[in-house]
Image (cartoon, each protein chain N blue to C red):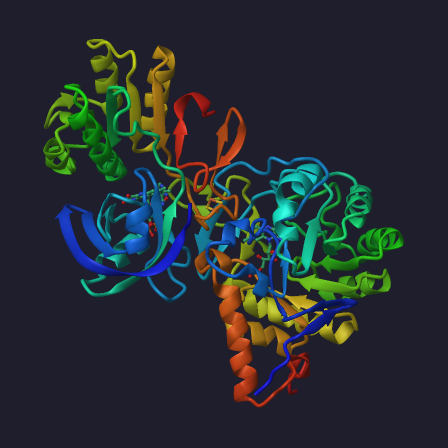
Length: 305
Length: 266
Ligand SMILES: Cc1cc2nc3c(=O)[nH]c(=O)nc-3n(C[C@H](O)[C@H](O)[C@H](O)COP(=O)(O)OP(=O)(O)OC[C@H]3O[C@@H](n4cnc5c(N)ncnc54)[C@H](O)[C@@H]3O)c2cc1C
Ligand SMILES: Cc1cc2nc3c(=O)[nH]c(=O)nc-3n(C[C@H](O)[C@H](O)[C@H](O)COP(=O)(O)O)c2cc1C
Ligand code: FES
């Protein structure tokens, strides 16, 4: 049976809906020995800032029940070093490369980042990371405020024709509202969820296990929260959703698609089994065949309620 | 160099002493390409608990076999002891950059190995390579200093001797050899020998490595230290394991776990 796994994020066409999440796949080189990278639907890079960033003190990660906490603090080589050292490898893959970007101090940094990336043909889309819980701006996260989200997305929209994805935070009362703001401001898609704010304590030392104290929770422990949020956003907006949060296998990826995600991103699972994303891809194909479905698009938002 | 992900069959699983186990794996690709100081990242089960892989040094290789030496300190290492001959382990390796040691036919740099506790694990592999050079070249023996809490906790003493190394011991309680820290033994020994041209290779707990770094930096002896950082991915993707160096942050799982003492910022 012939199946069609292609999906669209705005005007960006993906051969299949399986992507890898920002910060969990390095700059893809790290995974070249384990899989054929060209088979991925898309790759989202580790978030890039304008200037090189050292990130947060160590220890930066720890294991939790069914997941992990991280507070990397967006360590990255900065835009120019990224373009010089990391992008050439990504360009050669000839699949959609999505560059995740973030501001450190001033939201205006987004404009500078995007105008530079505009000039690079191989950049298929830009993901605005306005939701990293480990880099708090003066007034909290942009993604925690619908108005700030609207403002920044709108400004960026004015200066780029590239596909624009806004990455949302789960650390909010109503994620639907923030998603709506992103849509109204011209975002082509939204991706969710970034990590949930969390803490873990070493009781012997009475200290947080992560040096910065509060960190971001990821992995299967957060999946039900993530699925619920994608469902909420799906009911609120018309733009495509990239769903993520604890995806470990084809079934967990399908949960997201069924509640409304057009594509899924594999995150922490890449650390446990670097081949997870491609195993999910074969699992999705098998699911379609088993259920006699030809187009994966038929499954998007197909939840029976 | 290529990294592999494979299902490695357990060929033998033996309790050495106390909480310490030796496990031999059939892992051809890993065994053939491993260098001393490199490690493998092991998934001890298919379920979500424990969630992450665990990094363990490559202890020795022979043909298609690679073995590890590990201490039970928590959940994953406990589960590992329950794996039997014939079971499979999901393994990624070889990972990281190992020790830099002289290749055969080069000048012998008078190596001094310093091991604290489980730190012996990667140093046996290294000692094997160093003694290969020696038998071909000179009379200088590889010197190995082993530190442990007490006599009962000493590991690999016979193995180092079998390789032809000269072994000196330090125990915290004085039940064998020098009474005190292995770093103090190192300091004492350096005051008795001509250490120019020596290279120190050390693995063990952080305070010990810090002491070795101070000692070697003070005397301008080249020292290579293998650091144990908490790792989430082990393949350079998460940036969770970074170490401060004079040249910025470096990933312990990729640019490390072995670093030059003179480059580290503590
Ligand atoms: C490059 C590298 C090589 C290693 N080689 C060996 C080896 O050859 N043999 C060996 O026995 N161990 C080795 N370790 C340490 C080993 O990875 C940990 O002991 C193991 O992950 C513990 O897992 P667990 O689930 O049993 O314990 P956990 O339940 O995870 O932890 C139990 C206790 O051990 C401590 N602990 C856990 N991981 C580490 C760590 N990485 N460093 C220091 N303390 C830790 C925790 O803080 C906790 O108190 C190595 C570590 C690294 C980074
Ligand atoms: C170690 C680590 C680093 C991350 N770094 C980033 C980042 O730089 N930018 C970003 O947008 N999200 C980052 N994330 C969040 C993931 O992209 C993803 O949104 C989140 O982990 C939930 O998915 P998961 O449960 O499948 O991992 C990071 C997550 C982890 C675990
Ligand atoms: S453990 Fe992930 S980068 Fe080293």
